[in-house]
Image (cartoon, rainbow, N blue to C red; front, side, top):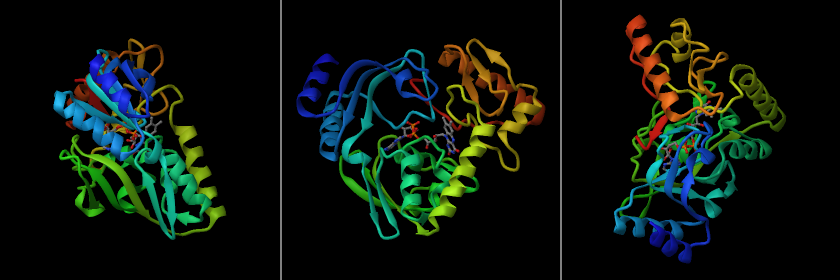
Length: 298
Ligand SMILES: Cc1cc2nc3c(=O)[nH]c(=O)nc-3n(C[C@H](O)[C@H](O)[C@H](O)COP(=O)(O)OP(=O)(O)OC[C@H]3O[C@@H](n4cnc5c(N)ncnc54)[C@H](O)[C@@H]3O)c2cc1C
């Protein structure tokens, strides 16, 4: 891996690190090291890194803001690739916002507000990147990315950029059919004319709503998807698991669909809680909870 790291570092401008602890890159603050961690600043660097990794048979994945990830305590035997530079740019084109995949969703929503563009206020408190939000079809307050996404530019496994319409991505409740070998590089969003003051007021309300209903300790957002007709949080609470603890991890006593890292939790602590929740909810309510959080290194 050392020689691959040297080869990459000689060709690109971004950081290249060996054995980088992924807990430093996840909102859970949990996760062992990635064998290699690489930051790329443009499509050319990305293509170079991917072709080298493909040639060497080294697995890789794209790390967004790590806000929907549970990484194994032993880490990831491959390369974590983070998009930077050109992938962090935003362009406004009339009612259209064009954003790189590494733009934080919160920054994109603020930019829309400041331009008087409506349609993205729901995203003002979602801590992921544009890329992660498209893959997950992130949403809140009854709206989701699919409501405003026009198209995306994806780098596929043959290392070519293709444009896909939003309707081709299989976007549904917290899922898409974008495969792990496809990398979202850029996305375009169609917005509407809005009133800046009203957009800012609505954003403040949404942020206040989160402050009151979501825990402050490190977490990865909702652990489970809501089953049809109910919420995962209400089922977990009804199963009597609010505040239940394993090691350093706890089912939040503020919102039962959040697991919080309250004292140096391990990924194993979180997995044990996940299994306990699933088993109890299935036994009591006959409902199989599906994970929303993505697992890495398992
Ligand atoms: C406090 C908190 C609140 C949250 N609230 C919400 C909410 O209200 N609604 C909601 O939907 N989610 C919420 N989340 C979850 C999370 O923010 C979203 O799922 C977000 O979309 C994940 O983006 P990310 O950049 O952090 O992705 P990561 O967690 O880094 O990655 C998630 C997946 O996307 C893939 N990925 C990331 N970028 C790319 C790319 N460019 N190309 C291809 N694949 C990529 C990764 O490989 C991984 O499989 C919350 C999380 C936290 C911690």
